[in-house]
Each structure stands twice: as structure tokens, then as C-alpha cells.
Image (cartoon, rainbow, N blue to C red; front, side, top):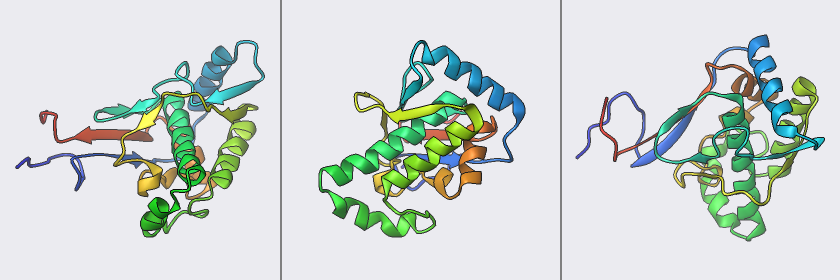
Length: 179
């Protein structure tokens, strides 16, 4: 049996979200610089986008860069959308109690609208969902499992998650050695 230390989980692999404090100007400026570099000649940024940052959230890592977090949000939204599109609503219905604090339950369009509005307000950026992505979130940490959606509890939570470098995504599993 593996004894876990320093990581909260009841699963062999899982992730969690840390949201701290208010956004700060330096984080917003860094996010803006990254976005400008990724836009090239397009006026709309397709997300998730591997040029922004990490787009594969598996068994290990700590991710606190704006691009990583923006990609994570987009992948969570796409996950909910695709479960609904494939008529697998029972997967979400089983997890709805885990999502009880979320304002929109499994209405992916409202989460995406919130994300679009924050990107527009803070970065003057238009975003669209990238339907041709290889990005993923480990199955035990994804939205359709009712996990890692705290950033969508409110606009303030989303802004703090994206624009505060102390906010992060933490991924771990049982297969790694303790430090």
C-alpha cells in the first residue's frame, strides 16, 4: 500500500486546483505578452493551444503559468461539451453532486462564455475552442468526473485562477516516488 504524503487524494491519480488571492498587474502583463506572441496574424486565439503552454495534464506536474491554466480551462469545457455531444449525460448526472457549487452544473456554453468574457475584459482577446486538440486531462481529474472546476465558481475565482501566479493546477499519482 502506498502512503501518500503532501498530496490530498483518494485516487491513484488525481489533480486539484489551488486558487489564491487577487490578480496582479505583472501576471496580466505576462499573459498579454504570451497571447500576442501566439496570435501571429489571427485576431482570435484558438484554445487549448500548445504554443500557449501545457495542454496535457496527466500524472505529474505543477502548472501556474497563464497559458497552462487557460488551456486547462478550455480542455475542461471541451470535455463537458463532448460528453453531452456524445449523449453520455449519465456520466455527468452521476457527478452532479460533486459539481453542486458550480453555477451552471454541466452547461458548457455558460462556462465558455465566462472564460471568453474574462479574456476579452482583461486581455482584449477573443478566444474560440480548438476542436482539433490533442490536449487532455487525466480521467480522474476531468470535469465530467466532477473534478477541478473550482475556477468556474465565479468570475472572481476565474480571474484569480488565471491571473495570479500563486494559483495552480497540481497533478500527482501513486506511481511516483515521494520527494
